[in-house]
Image 1 (cartoon, rainbow, N blue to C red):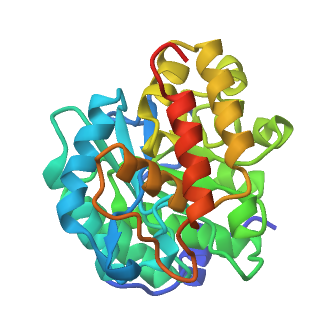
Image 2 (spheres, helix red, strand yellow):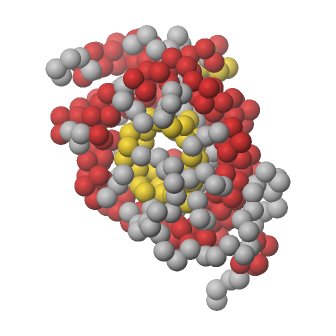
Length: 325
């Protein structure tokens, strides 16, 4: 039995007034071309969140140098407070402040997308609403981890987030390795029909067979796992949201903009060499080595690199990021 829109609204949580409701009379979408203006494009860095004091507090002074470094490295924008940005380990207030600092620091034409995914719908809505109010360019939300949610629960959660940031482009962040379960395709298809600002997805799943079902008509897909970027672009993806780009923006820019096989080989080598280490810790150490950040601190329970690991990472980035490599 198909539920009515009124029944769906009754099931949706009663949230903060900042969760902007869509007009009940707005027609359901039946065609998808040119859904959104101002969508994300190209190479997006999944940015680290600069921390200090053993990971206890934001390193506010390092945000502007980080944004300049990423823009100068060829990035088209950033995604804040995602997996590489330790978003789930930060407070709502810290995540809001990180959004504001990135917006203050960005050069013209540089996109700031905000990952608003959180454990609860309440916090997700607050972060999505704040992103809109602060002037962000887009919002992405991962399925809440820990509890395996059903299709209706996931739809309600994503729909509330999309409503809260409307009219900003909204992206579902699909990453079974972090959420613990895949977002069912029918949930995405229903969002496509009923959430006019759904612009697409970031898909970080592997292998590529797990990505293919999300390449849906009318939705932009960004690849999250760098070794799959070239295959994804060939299959219709529009770009990448890359954690490696936080430390090696030049490589990801070349990979996405030039579809470079050489850059593909470099990201494969980086992922292979560093697969057993924490990416936030690795990226921050490289950024310290490159003179971008003052501290490589991560938030517990994550831990920074050991002395031996730091030496290993430094050798890798010197080798793989040197001219002519």
